[in-house]
Image (tube, rainbow, N blue to C red; front, side, top):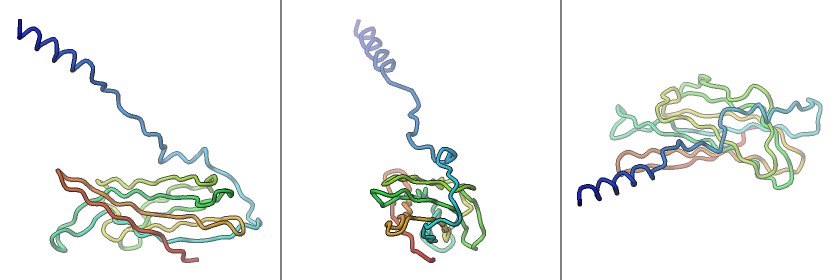
Length: 169
C-alpha cells in the first residue's frame, strides 16, 4: 500500500509541473513595427554614441577567454519626447562591422527601452567589440542612454558588469 501511495504522489507531482515554454515579452529582432520615416530637413538634433561591449573577457591569462552574454539596453530618457534611432552597428575587436541591427529609422516613445542581445556562444565580437549608434532627438530633449550589461554564470559562479556609452558627435 505504501508503494501505491508513493507512486500516486509522485505521479501527481510530475503531472502538476508545467512544462510550457515561457515566451519572451520582448521581441529583440523585430523592429518593423517601430519603423518611421523622418524628414531629412527636420529640426531634430543629430548625435552619435559609442558603446564598448565585451562578448569575451580574458580569464587566467591572455591565452584563455571567457564568453559572456551581452545585453545592450537602448533607453529613451525623455518622459515627454519620442526619439529616433537611425543606426545600431556592431563591430568586432579589429573594427570590422559584424552586424547592423536595423536598416530603417526606428522610434522609441517617452521612457521606452529596447534591447539587443549578443548570445554567449557568439564569438565574432571578441574582447574589444563595440557599437556605434546614430540618433536624432528634438531640441532640448535629453540624450538617449546606451548601456551594455555583460554577464555569465557557470555552476555557482556568476560574473556581471556594465558599460555606458559616450557621445562622439
